[in-house]
Image (tube, rainbow, N blue to C red; front, side, top):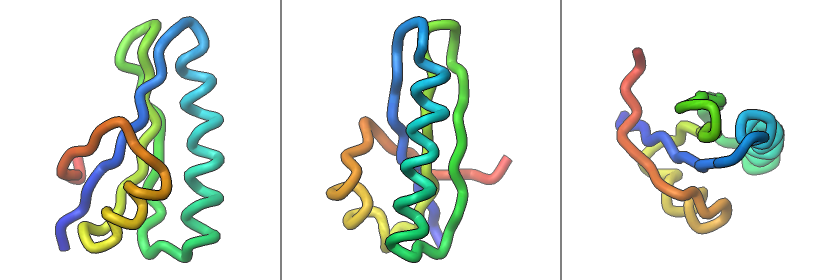
Length: 79
């Protein structure tokens, strides 16, 4: 099963806090839509750039993309 990492970029001095808050809403969406995967997180790229992400099954991607409008996406590889 191919998994995709949907990414939202946040920039500025409060980017990390905003990304953390965004993950709360992503988790709410997972619950309300009963998605099978529950992989979310925050990564700090540098001081003024952080990302929030949600991993979805390839088959769920169009629905989630259209509803949540991520900035970008990539194939998810478990590290």
